[in-house]
Length: 401
Length: 87
Image 1 (tube, rainbow over the protein chains, first blue to last red):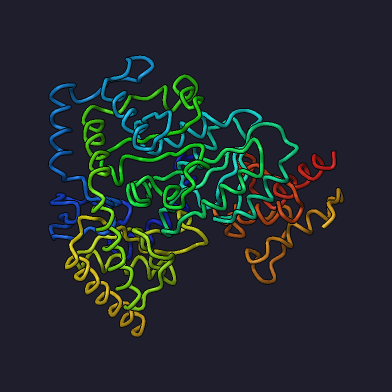
Image 2 (cartoon, rainbow over the protein chains, first blue to last red; image 1 turned 30 degrees about the horizontal axis):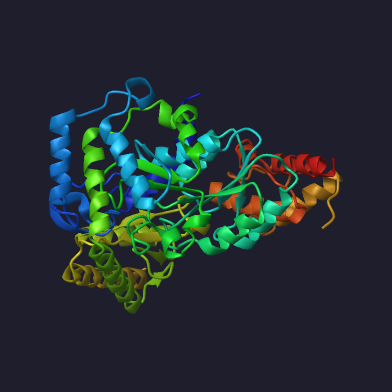
């Protein structure tokens, strides 16, 4: 028995994708010149798939904060907070998140992935039930797997189905933890949080966790996410998020008004048994959070950019997966076409994400774009011209076949 | 539908719910593999589980789905949950 035998189907599929050109799952950006431009295969490429929503990765104040923190506190924390203690920067960043959200409690984690793992697995114990949206991110599923609780699934963005599932579970003891995302990262659709909050309120013993990884900094007047935009922050028990998108760092957070959130520090393994976030990340994220508070124009810019690309792609005749948001997914008819389109765009100096099943809902084959406040309108127009060329080539190839 | 403990009836209902995953004319037996034979990946499996849960008005925890390889395994899970529901 070869330990790699189980990967044979995966390897066969990977080979088919590679045969169409380059490796979409192993692309190297040789140099990053700005939040929106990088060098790929020696060519200047417009980046439209970075999740760098507010474009803060090259912000001078964030860079200075990271440099200063490294000089003051060193390159790493070399251990976990329960064993090595917290740095002042961890505590100050948690205070900044409490203030930003107006919530009583906040915890920071080493990655966004671990934020979901730690919060879900920490909160939902033996006898509890997790109810997860069927389009949930892998970090949510992995949190569910790590939890001692049982997990059941409800249909994507379907509050009525959630309601029926909760009704069916009414005689089962234990708490019910409902897990949804604010903005879904693949299709770019948002959760009907008002309706989910209403369902939660009908079922005592239920709690709502919203992962705002892709919506934090972008949705809501203050950038607190879809719950703020929908006016239902009071009905959300736990907000989880990441530092690696709008905050342009690495790490994650959870905030809540429930004092019990603090128990995760002594009860949740992904918090307890990993190195704490490093000083540079803490410092740049603290500064980025201030910028989100001080610069609402960043949100105005990303929405204007998203509209420009969204409208332009629609005019070119592409089928878009969801209404306007900073994530724009283009549906293609099959995997071979999607891979070919992605390669043509890289050839033309445009980087977007290729998203294929089973990483996508309902077997969708997608080109996924994410906008940045740092994109200039003429960059977006150039991207649209290159999409048009790609579309024409695809049509020519299809006609030739 | 009224839940039943009839094993054949449960297997028949489960195979019926395989619906769009079932190749035309394909004979489904308890040994039919969900992945290899019916090409049901992890995402499609979740949709299928939700259809089955609503049909039988049961809850199948995702944690148990990982061990499920064949249609027979799936029917077994359903039987267990139907029996648990009926007490």
